Image 1 (cartoon, rainbow, N blue to C red):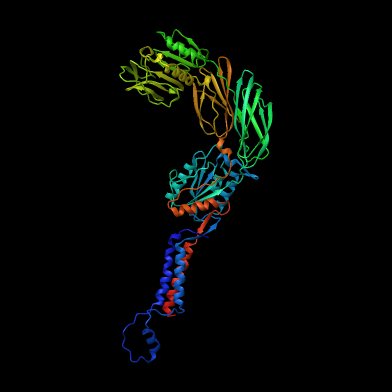
Image 2 (image 1 turned 30 degrees about the horizontal axis):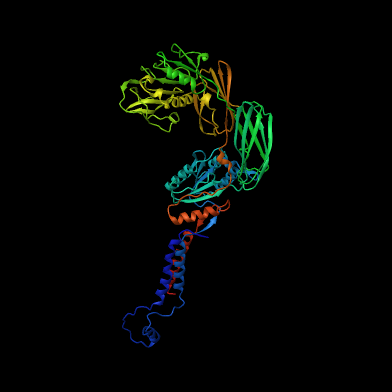
Length: 627
């Protein structure tokens, strides 16, 4: 039994008040009567000194006391646990994050949630409605306030897990907003509390409706691969692998490394203590484009994190072309020393329609602007004319020192502009996709961004009209610029997670591009650019990008893997802020003891109030009869 409003217990003072009224003597009234012989006993009571009389057995008193007790009980709102839905409108939220794929016996946590959600739908009354929300990467309302069981059951049956972490704050904010706008609403959350977030009023709007958390998890034993990297060396390929034990018991098993053709390269065994990790080093692995590590724990709750891919990367030589009609010794020298580039000095402007054989990873234009963008990334210095893609506004004298607009930008890392002096700069109008990095007054001295799928950096001043090439900041800045403009040679495609937005570097001048997914599906990429931004599907595994270049087919691999946070499958509690302190305390107590058994509570307030009204009707009838 629970008491929902113990603050109303002071209404119980009406019970002794009723008793006191029956103890007090009746007020005497003057009346003319023919004789007092028959009223002797009554007169004795009236003439007593004490202001009250002895309490006597009285049916009216008993009925009034019973009615008062029932009303007090109704005011403090007693409730009993129940497995059925008690709210007029239930907002059911189901967590579909990666940890919901953990095994609980013969079923996963999500399968358990689906079966219990379907059971709740079957128990809906004729006047009750339900809203179904999927708590995925973003909350998704699947069915809105429906009393029809069929669409609810169909939507629940289609729930599927994803390999990322659910946005609990967004899901609870949405559920709380719906509950606030729909009187008589209650929220039921089905999940394992992954994310270990204590949600409070600062992050989620508090709502007054009931909140029940149904825990779907009980297993906490899980072993996963935390890190797997490979690196080419002079003696071969070396691999480093870390195995994490997230459980409360020691974990044992085997770890194996395979090459691109699934050939066994090395194997080892592990024995890891509770909450600990073990690191393995693999020396002289056979050369392969990609490696796959697999662990086989003796006890494991989540199998999706037992496989990890690694793509070895060695920076190659990129092709760069420098076009400087007036010549620039500082620029030519710095391009030879920074980055991994083969720099070619050309004597005439390139043809934008050049074939793949003339494609470059990086084009550098000094004091000249091409009419059309070439195939490749672009570094433009001292632009001298306006074109369709370059809105040049004119040349201005500078009377202020350069200052960084975005000091945290990677292009400005360790670059000090305080001792740099620049005489004149070229003013540019707004360019969509480009942002200012360094400015002097109202003139942007450095801009960077992406135009037509090409990375571009614009240095809006002539290097000869400044002392920038003489400062230590110049080679550092050029190193940052070259690394950013030629990512295909300086860094591999990073490991990503399903559903994320990823930017793929593309080879300039490629005649055809095909992206192959882990399930074998192929997608043709028709972008004539140096990069492609795409949202990854909810599919883990190894992706391959094939490009047709002048030297043949170039294949680039990148893995998409489960979010590491989801490997810790230990069940956690989930609670939300309530609008008053009493409800908040009761909510926390209910969350701490909540299991998959009782779902909610059913208040007895209306029944008690109805019974009290019935007792009052009986009392009135007794009074009319004169009992």
